[in-house]
Length: 187
Image (cartoon, rainbow, N blue to C red):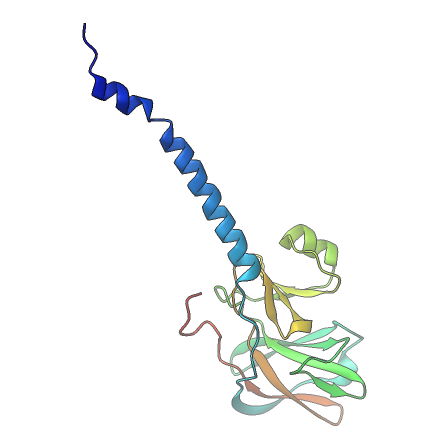
């Protein structure tokens, strides 16, 4: 009985399929890990779109660094947070620093929440930090309020939209909002 040599040759290369498949899977995972960790857009200069003047919080509402208040501005859920140090877009009043951000995650638009416990941040979001962050519960992106809302981990590639703040007396006012950074970009 004669064996067809072409079939034997073909069968001798079947091992290539699982090896190529495995190498491709590891390559995809490495590229994904690089993308969610390093391919983040940094916040640029503010691009506020002027809006109505709206009182959003009183200075007495804040109990110290990383305390926050939620508000709605131009139908966008937002939050204002007291920070321990100034940022380029924060407002300083009497030695206290405040910044405000849209709560819409720049991945798919879920609402981000302050994550005050850094152990919860590490366990739930797989991100270790030494201060509270803003986290998206949908796909676990993490944003740093001390870095102007920059996405520091997760699927979100763009920073949170910033809210323009002004202080008048003991009240913080919103005066403008940046457009959603995802608009017109591949997110």
